[in-house]
Image (cartoon, rainbow, N blue to C red; front, top):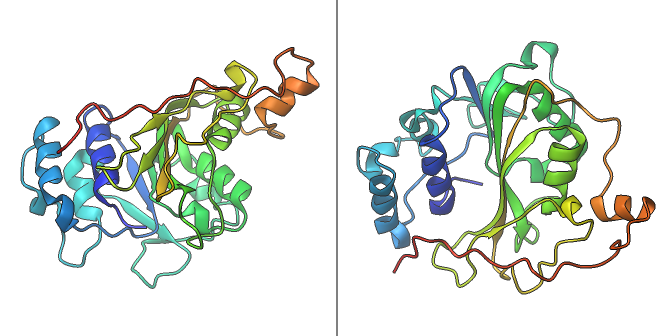
Length: 262
């Protein structure tokens, strides 16, 4: 994937509250260009978050996104890919664990749609955990719905809360559905941990049929750790004999963007 307008907006928002102090990494060498139909949104987002410059200031001639990330304050970003066909600076197969020299190295890792193309997702997620420094953050945007035939997988919020929060003891700062069309009738939907109630999230009619990201932000802490295993929350509730096991939540509602655009 490339960085479209809705991911641009998320990165701009992130830049106002998190500035990595060390190495930063982008999975895949992501493209960035201005979507013509939403060109006015870029300027509005830049202004609303108090940034300087115009939308074209974030572009680079070869169409990649290093200039964008640098100007947002994320530093000279390194890029990781399976091969060097797009000029990645670090070559690594995410199906395998990273070399020891890459562990605890990065204050920020941006996955703008790479893990969904990796067959061995558990290894990929463990590798990302290993490469993050304590205090570092992973920003991920992969397919939740509508990306039929795009990658090997589409993901659910259960994975975020099960693996990153409850299994790894990381902080989940944000977990939401984002339609790729900023003027979609379906707004952002924020997800809480299903384990809080021991029941599954009901997403039918809450998530639109069009392409939708599962966007999340997690922080690795000094108390984080890799798990021996991870269990889906509602099944774990059943096995523990909770009274509400197997129910489905009905109170998850969309959270339309406050800054509705016309």
